[in-house]
Image 1 (spheres, protein in one colour):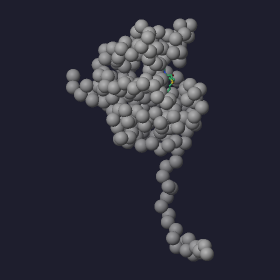
Image 2 (image 1 turned 60 degrees about the vertical axis):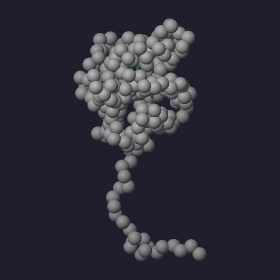
Image 3 (image 1 turned 45 degrees about the vertical axis):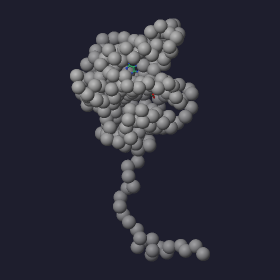
Image 4 (image 1 turned 135 degrees about the horizontal axis):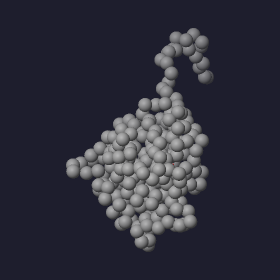
Length: 244
Ligand SMILES: C[S@@+](CC[C@H](N)C(=O)[O-])C[C@H]1O[C@@H](n2cnc3c(N)ncnc32)[C@H](O)[C@@H]1O
């Protein structure tokens, strides 16, 4: 026989401990991911890729970490908020002013920071500025990050912009910190090509050795590389040397 607690039992057992944690949910009205990725909920691919980043860079989790995400789009912020992922600071930088404004106004949580960078990109920001310099992020007081990351961002950059981005990020990450990024590589191309020269930056393809040289010129040490895997292209794990 099922025993049902009486009303009197319920009252006697009742605890008034306040709200059960903080609930937050965001649904940014933007998508920057390819159709094969965007068919899954952003939280699913975002969580999967953040786990991959942690594992490959040598972290147990994002807990206690400061992560700088260049070309952030909206997916990782969405995943961190909606899945209540622990993180010390997530700073997202993007050339898309509308997306950054949306994130700034909708995510009012001190663990998040979003900054717009007006930088020319022939696919994403054709009217952007071509005079961004290596200190642009540092001047926004973006400093002391445990790591910087870029998912599908170098995939859409000309070499001179990739070099500039690697240098900008180098200045924002602490000594011994990491850089994780993905790129489209192909050992059969000479240095770098655009898959479709009539649509520059739609798909920028690099010879891996050429790309590694570019990364090294900015001071990073390339520690490991990975072949493409679900939801991400070839990946590079780099380290800022602990001492000069
Ligand atoms: C393919 S989307 C990837 C978005 C996000 N990283 C993700 O994986 O969901 C590329 C993003 O990089 C941004 N982007 C491209 N070039 C940029 C630049 N030079 N400066 C800042 N953001 C840039 C675009 O606006 C876009 O949001």
